[in-house]
Length: 180
Image (tube, rainbow, N blue to C red):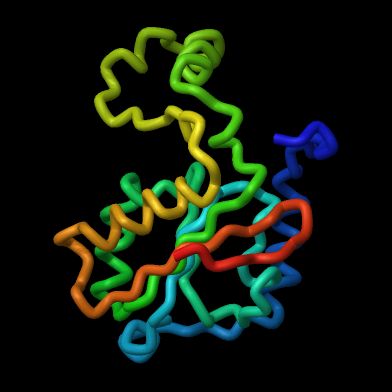
């Protein structure tokens, strides 16, 4: 991540409870079958990076789209979530990657090294078969987007009528562009 972003201290539990109480004063529930029958038709798959705010950056209302996030917005790790959103009606997935993603700065080797230096059990990772962390391996952002778009388009698990599009959010300018 960019050195210009200071790490924020942990938010005290009482402060979170106070913020939630303020939110709850105006909360309007959306519950039951009616809600599930009106699930958004669009989902955005994006990185977990706290600098990304798809609702704000794309001018979306709270219930316009489903936001699915993980490290680097890696679709291969999201199969269960993608299947669930399809079940509830999602038929367009927008993959949005960003230009200053941590995937450019991480390698499998430095990830494993960091884990072993900080974990309760440094050897636990040896038994974890699902490790896919490895960074972008020299790919440019457009190639990373195209790789994940093709992965989804070629997946037999994606409903045939589903639209998959790929986008890049430029962290420097705040602008988004479609690449697939």
